[in-house]
Amino acid sequence: MTYLNRRSLLWGAAALGAGAAMGRAYAQAPSGPFKLDPLPYAANKNEPHIDAQTMEIHHGRHHAAYVNNLNGIAQQHGQIGQTPLHEILAKLSDVPEAVRTAVRNNGGGHANHTMFWQIMGGSGSEPKGEVKAAIDRDLGGFAKFQEDFNAAGGRVFGSGWVFVTVDGGGKLALVTKPNQDTPLMDGQRALLGNDVWEHAYYLKYQNRRPDYLKAWWNVVNWDKIDERYAAAKAGKLTI
Image (cartoon, rainbow, N blue to C red; front, side, top):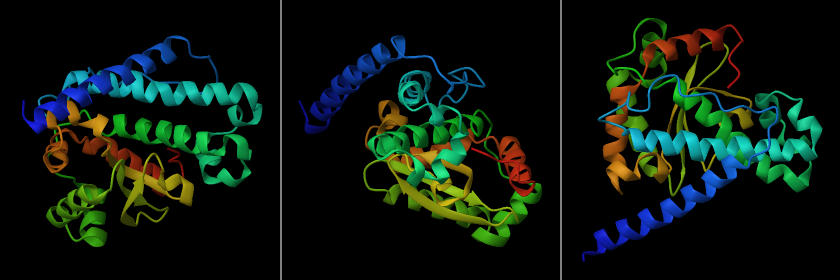
């Protein structure tokens, strides 16, 4: 057996174990103020670029675990459940120290993934209108933007995200974050972002993150990104 095959087998066993644990947690999870919305499209909508099994595990286990953990925290700290998520993440220093890291990780994971599902399920192509103009103005044009975005995502060490942030004036910037950190923690808004945790791509791409980053553009929904851009300029974009 080759090293890669052994590594794939071990990783697969670990993923199944983790998935089983998260599945149990989901089944026993407390109800609460934080909700896991269903995927806005069928799990196979992003095939062949992102397979249905990855979507099902990613949404129904990984994202679900973040939501369930937040609800568990809210049972003990009621104020967390009464505050909008983007406000919590913008003021993490106000969160009780005993649960601050858990809120950072699980709250960030919930916000990031909520955005992530929204901006996929499309047919790729290219942006148009105001978003295209903003990319041309702030990020050097679509081709350069894609190249820089993919390179930034490839440089993330371990697990994390690559984002495009947008301010109230519509200005864009490219940033990366480790783990489940989010631009919301810096008082910013994410226009779009790609998840570069291994669970987002390993079943199909194994360790070939650059291939995943390149393929991901084929499922981007620019209509939804247009809506997020307009909401950001109107001061209405939350997560």
